[in-house]
Length: 319
Ligand SMILES: NC(=[NH2+])NCCC[C@H](N)C(=O)O
Ligand SMILES: [Mn+2]
Ligand SMILES: [Mn+2]
Image (tube, rainbow, N blue to C red; front, side):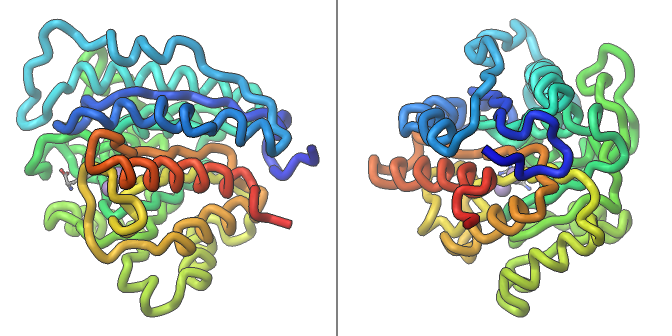
């Protein structure tokens, strides 16, 4: 298969990391996201598109590595477990990126993106652009979070905007603050942003396209403006982190923090197609599919849409 990427030396190999992890939020079941996508056939689907798959080993370890004792850190829940799991994700994603593979990571809750972003930025450095597709901004710091759920915080750590930078063996002490540049992050799909997060977005001048912008300009213009902001010449590598709750709950009901008024089926797919079309994509996360929430039909629908977003990111619908 022809390499569709400007940056990957093994662009016809997908480096797949499955992360059955739910420690970044309180609802069980999101750890079964990857296995349900595998049952739905994601491996055969990716191979059917002409890719080889290199699967990260030991996915069950994410379930068993929970520390015996993990007291809250201020408001943050399961800090050590989230930190350890994300650190392992970082190693697995780094290895795929270093080998020049397209790194695809299936979650699990969105706290695992601390790991995926550290892994990809270790290899691509300052050049890395991040397109964050989500109903939520996930940029809470330990100071601003109300819920204490770390899936609402991954960006604060990688951007390095927490009031105190974790050091050494402390949870998240392994994350290089600022490994993702503030001016290379852009959001699409926001509609449920906490007041502390709004303050952070303004303070750090971070570009965001909310659902209001999607309504106003249309998804085509929004994706173009988002890419123009982070990657005007389409000359830099892009990591897309896609939270399935960016989609409207009528399209992706089985997720832990659904918010009405989201992206349509086509708008979600359009984002993946347009980013794939640039040839700049080097890493994709697909997170927050929770098969335990809702009836069997909601589950089937959500797993199916998760798989098709991944396929579109790999270029399925490009002619
Ligand atoms: N990845 C997600 N679904 N995040 C939801 C975060 C919700 C809320 N902002 C919080 O910090 O708790
Ligand atoms: Mn979300
Ligand atoms: Mn999220």
